[in-house]
Amino acid sequence: MVDFGYKIQADRQINLDITNKALANFVKKHENSFNTCIGCGTCTATCSTAKFTDFNFRRLQLFIRRGETANVKAEIAKCMLCGKCQLACPRGVNTRNVIMMIKKGLEAHV
Amino acid sequence: MKIEGKRAVWNEYQKDIAADKYFYVRSCVRQNFFPGSETTFLRIMREELGKDIYEHPCHTTCTGIGYHGDIVPIDTMMTVVARQFALMTEAGYENLVPSCITSFGIYTEVLDTWHHFPETEAKIREYLKKATGREFQIPKNLAHASDVIYKFRKEIAAKAKFKLINKETGKPLQVVEHIGCHYSKMFPNKGVGGAEYPYVLVGMIEDWGGEIIDYPERRHCCGFGFRQYLVQANRGYSMSCSHKKFESMEPYKPDMIITNCPGCPMFLDKWQYAIAEMEGKTYGANGQGIPVFTYEEVAGMVLGYDPWDIGLQVHQVSCEPLLDKIGIPYNKEKKYDGVNGQKLGVPEMPVNLKCC
Image (tube, rainbow over all chains, first blue to last red):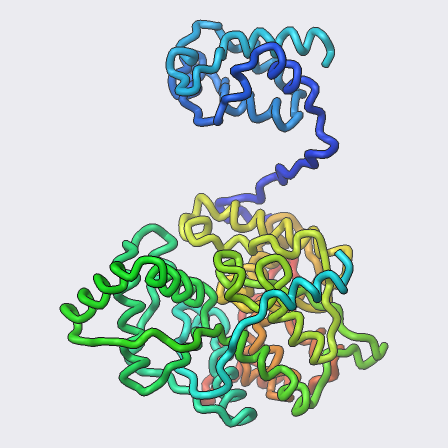
């Protein structure tokens, strides 16, 4: 097969009617500020962990909202809970508590 | 949506299309991608329909590719467009017909901007006057070339030598229609049928004997997207869009695709080659692709023009299986003969995509 230097991206389309929103709803309920996240990525830009790993809080919140929770447990294990992202967030999202609520939500099997 | 519902939507979005005396502006890229299309359009307009259509030798790009690629500033783009209007005014025409969908979008955007911001129009008039000494009138009618063919689709059907019908089975050909995004997605009321259910190509296909396929990703972009393609590292985005459309239309077994944009036929045609060579996947019958045509080429085919005169030999996906289905005669030996008698050269055959 020929390599032209680019490839077909996997289709990221989801069906919002059937996607699992349980974890997203759990986090929204227990950490209300999660509702105000606009996915700007300021958290990720300032993240110490992201400097050394592929941890990405912005992508994490997107995965949760899309119901794509398969890798979430492994992802949040990378977070050091230092809270720099919380200082930088322009929307005042309590990002540390979001991580904790994701953990609780996963433990509660939502 | 049921077909009755679609017709109701189409009826809400109708536009005035001038009946004669057109000022034609060519596309930058179509003459390279599918060089027979614009010539075929002019031939149909002049020889079949007897219309007065004029193209000025000094007209330039509308700068659409540069504008949408974030290279050309909006004031520059509007001044260039104003110059095209000036050429039209000087030539004594009032009805502008662009060949390119992006140009159509650019002209529509400029006219709408000037409508809402007359001070911008005044500023651009001043720029043009200072730069070239020219003045201009706003076109009375702006219609894309596909709008014009749509308007005269029944006249073309009356003169047709072939119909879009499978001569073996007698059944209508199954056709995928693909509208360029800049035709009606920016200004739905400027396109026949609006943004969701554009009727401009559907009308042609229905009147020329074919049947339209309504598939899930029908309104998805082909993926051209300017910077998506211009930057090599981004071409995966472009290809993924086309790939998504092919996967969506494949179960309906389309006989052909008809388009009204310079980029769409290019990408829907050439990406079939690239996907086949990268992944071994083909979407047509017997390892071939789905033939992709411009609306002028389809009009030329039904009018019985020689397939090699309308440029079908420059398509990546071979057109011969479709010509055989319809029963259009062609001389295999003359496929790569140029109009000046010189041989164009026989292209190398792809490994995975079967071509004639």
